[in-house]
Image (cartoon, rainbow, N blue to C red):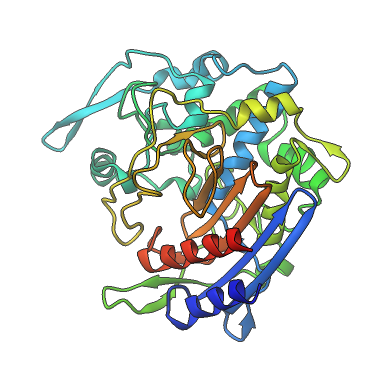
Length: 381
């Protein structure tokens, strides 16, 4: 266990991260926790430090949809436009005529499965040059601002054609609202956060938690870390289930333990066993998940988790289709938030873990080396 703590301390000392909070667990509970560095001026990082978890929100949004599926209110092959007619207005961005975007009608209809697996054609501009150009020409607000115009963004490929990371889970949150009738924040609170006692996972930061929000940093061209001032987008037009949550390492680890326990935790049944098994299965075959080349180096480095290892997407996570020697097993699930808050869960070995900081660019190579060292050390215990 001293080795795990040393990895965190070395990561801070070597400027791989401004601070790190990490925790491990199995189905019975937390097995280790540690932190290193300062999450703010004069404020030591702790397991209950508040993080902007950005895309760690996506697995929560997918779980909301799975709750409706579990209750027979939603099917994976339902067409999105049958639930949200406004989705039928979206076209495929096919190119540009000078500075004018060119569109065509989609050849296939997007389903709930497409939204949940990032195969709908909706992508972020950070890793797609075509969408980045569309944002530049149209002065579109970024999705994390929570503007309603996000739901007017076009597709860049036909649903089902390939895997492309994007805002599908934001649309999935709208599906949940339309079917259930509750707002997505109320749904999350009543169906997930309150039963699991995730008391520090919120959409809006109350004053008490605002004081504990971790600071963020950015790595400059010289390799040094500098402070990064990030706005807080309160009271948005919509709470995006792709990005909108604040949480802690401890709370998120509780969420991951829900899946190690096959859908039940703290005496509460969130999902039936069969639904959990369905959720964690490969839902993109024969498509696989490949590398994400960055077109915005300040926001993200190139992303290529476990190169050479076959990966797919489940209904909530990146899914490993092969064992990673000395690390996670086939069937493991994972993802991360934009500011390098990472996690994985390994049902085969009954392991879940978080390794979290607040740092740009995403997938920063120096930080990712520390993350790998941590994971390898976890499996050596």
